[in-house]
Image (cartoon, rainbow, N blue to C red; front, side):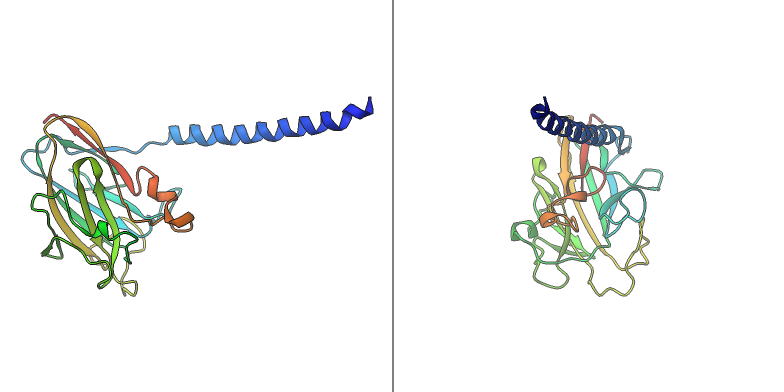
Length: 228
């Protein structure tokens, strides 16, 4: 009888560990499903939509206070931690990005080109350009990419030696920042369009691609285009 005791003990131990791992996985899955990011609705706006967003080096609150993030100013004028924005179809969207994070070199210089905007250009602190050279000045901090719309806008970073950086969101324009402006046109029909930053900026994650990079509400989101 004793010859079966060790295999039986090992088997029970394996089952116990498997049960714990399964529980942890289910807890994580249901925790993710319970979490939600609010949709900020701009679809009731008449005429061109003025979309004002900011990118920050550290959110400063919530379960991930050290994560980089996007925020958006809602139609009522309040900053909201959300990356799901509802926009009217077939409408010009004028975007102003306040960029508060430091920049660096690109792993792929393709992301330095500006595409998908109305004039294939963007303005950095009022100066229009079609390409941002990542090797010049402060480099690129983040990008705003909507692959299905062919939209790519690199966001020029502030200096890593900035004397007055923003420490927590939402950031005030009194902190060191760059302002990037551009416009694009939404498709004529309804649809959901995934957008994301393509600059690996997940600090402490493998190759910078974890954490906030793939997280809705931080460095990725959706443009929910609806009939006007």
